[in-house]
Image (cartoon, rainbow, N blue to C red; front, side, top):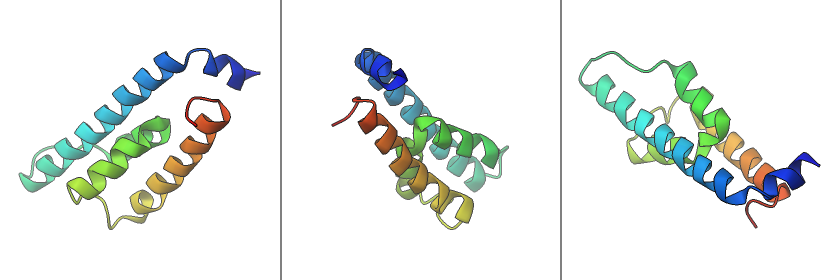
Length: 97
């Protein structure tokens, strides 16, 4: 029932996904820049939280585009797994086909 209700708001959900994935990508870019210039960093918990909150695509792109967090198991395992799970949920909800 919930999945059917979500499909009724497909445009809003796609817009929200675009926003959260853009933010996740930007956070990854900022954290990489901060790491290189030895500035204050974004906590790993925050980065992973965005990935878990349907920002996994943006985080995965950022990880490989900026070569950031690609050696940390918490990231190179969690982020792709979340992307697959998110795709399944969105497919089952009728948001993507």
